[in-house]
Image 1 (spheres, rainbow, N blue to C red):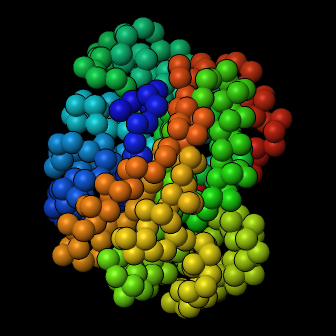
Image 2 (cartoon, rainbow, N blue to C red):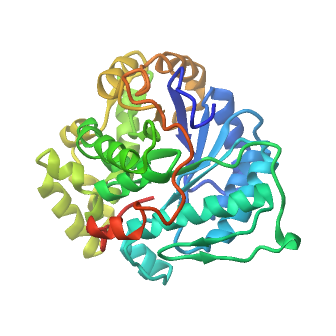
Length: 387
């Protein structure tokens, strides 16, 4: 399936658990493929996402390997482009490159990289990648000048040459309206953040932003939307409870980041976000999970047994997305039943079926009216988006 083709069925993705040791990646991705997932998302938390993606591609034969998300700003677009090109060639076209900004605190404090108009910066990063890909594929001179990057040199000696497959699709992700508009302008796909995958956020922020960006760029349709909702599920109610306990700590940590509180505020749960942020600021990490009680989790995250979940997710996301992300079963003994669940989830109507076809045609070249001047006029300075 290419980003330009309307999805005939719902794409099903799962995220490689971030703490997976490199030696364990082959077994975990083999299990993911065996379960029947279409895509494995490779995160960037404690490992380099592109290195892990290479392992994932090596030890699978069918599924798409998508970084979700590789952090853009700490890397030169040329460095990222070389790695993505190699991964596309090695995987025979199964690799997709997801790029995002992360939040200011991590980019400045953890990576010691400047934070400057992140939405404008990300747009130029994606445009740079596309320009480099085009030079790789055609051998034409590299000539890109944008808001943050200038690429004018690529001698034949340093050009890896064309791929036997299409160039990697470019995905991005985030929370706020500005970053969604950038995705609508220049991306092939968009992956929602776990804290802001609620249907209300999709309807109020993500889809309108994607449509506005696509319209401004003259694109017919919007990027593919993959929703990573952190659904809480299991074969029985007891298993659902165990899954809820496992998810609580991660979600509490994520919601403690002020930039991720959009959905909490929209649902009248702003005080929960404030309390989590205060605890994180004072280093009280171990108590975060206690702040997210069962009622709050039920409001934020889809719940249901394997028998219930297809209807739950259909009501929440039918017609709003082209792909859904789910976690792996906690107990491998449940894998057979979980595989059957995936087949039911494929039948949920996609956004294409509801009249939001994926974007057709190439994104605009850098330098047009959707470049820095237009983005700056929308007030992009200081926005915080996420991987």
